[in-house]
Length: 150
Image (cartoon, rainbow, N blue to C red; front, side, top):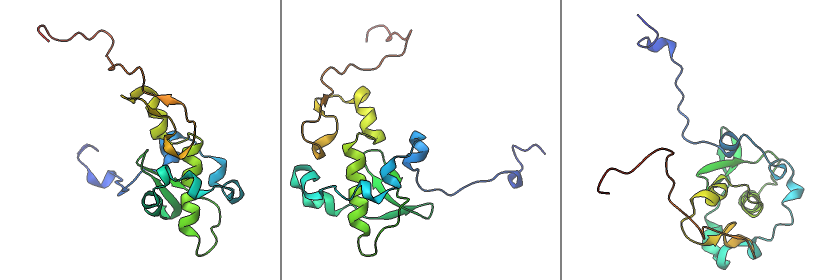
């Protein structure tokens, strides 16, 4: 029997998510050093002062490591520093805001190419963010022509 049909030769995983480190192949200093996010002002950085948005951000875990979910990337951002007890959500929020303000979210990176309408590059969590999406054109495959009559 070939390995193609031999299920004992397969090693399947049951991962339910994907983390930012895996998507981008990068980590960021603020994932490892709590002092780099201590000065993040969550109230000032909250989009449109929408506290409901901020309250939806909680410390979670990915692969047994504390993490915060970046909904713009649809992936987890792992937190590798020790979080003081009782401040778990606060630090998850600070790490996420720092990540978004520095433009390191994979979802933000995609805006350059795929934003179809003018919008702040780094969203409303950073004042005076440059605008992207002003000159969007649909992507076209090289050499592809639409069928006749279309």
